[in-house]
Length: 288
Image 1 (cartoon, rainbow, N blue to C red):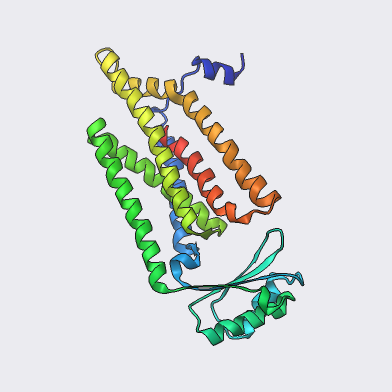
Image 2 (cartoon, helix red, strand yellow):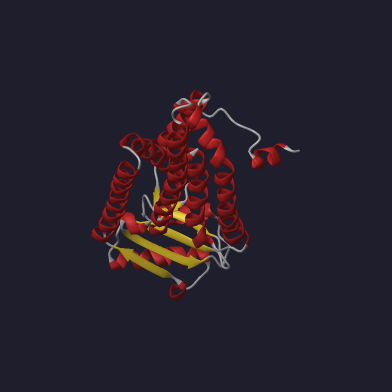
């Protein structure tokens, strides 16, 4: 019988607790890399968080990113973020600090000149700094409330030590997802925040399943086995369930990410799907 078959039938038992130093090194290294990326590269925040002005025009002339950056920079818009957005019709996208009306028109004029479009083709979005600050505050508040509820639930359902372990797993998933997001350079939008909260909930669900199995085995076999033995036994019992659940989640998310955003050009799904894909994978690892 193959290894996968034996694993599915429960004939293979991994010594998870005995290899805890290896898992700590892997997780610690990944978290350190993620934190360094956040410190060095930081996030590519959308205008919803930073506030400012966004202009998009269809790239009819197929202008290169370098040409667009050069034209915008020569026009005096220092610090502007220039991107080529791939979709059914490629677009040039420029995000700057908040601009007055006359400067907005001048930026549009520069951009349509490079893209070979008309002034009427341009899309303009202006978000004030107050609104951006409100979005950021609400995102942080939602995360804090979620963590408080998680801590209280696991403390009362199991014990406070398990609550700390669950929080460590959640922060692990949060840092890994945020770090890869920073490395890739995808734009952080409100949809990204929703995806992060979703994957934290998924990770918590997987973690609670493991905790519940550990508690069940302690009650049934605690007088005959040590805690490390029971922990190993419990994790091997739920291993295939976790793998199967993750695969059934990752397959549709992967199709959303790779087929929807890259093959079909639905770039608006890319940020959301990437956060879900990374978070589900990291959540499965951390829960085990």
